[in-house]
Length: 156
Image: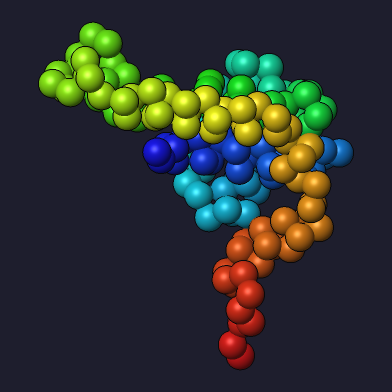
């Protein structure tokens, strides 16, 4: 199973905002911190704002911040809200399933159980848990925005 870039970037936006809870952050700052297109992030921030997870302030001195404390932002709920499809195998799609093995296949039940386990783990995780090592994350983002690769030194 692979999550979309949209979900990945959504989680990164939340992590960035969680690390900067006491300030308004611009989308450009997030884009620079992660080396992600600002255009991609604008759509994500808009959705997060509409869902009430992020508060956005427009204008020259505007920016975004978390609208909820990190302890109230559930990672499983965020992933469910940002992913359009969890049909990890064809037989999960009851309308378009063409797999001839479906009536006898035991793999479907195992895949369903695996998906449930995946969400059990994510449902037990909040943004606060994800940013518990804030100092280390900040250092990695700072290195990234300076053009360095984590763990490597810049050559002179």
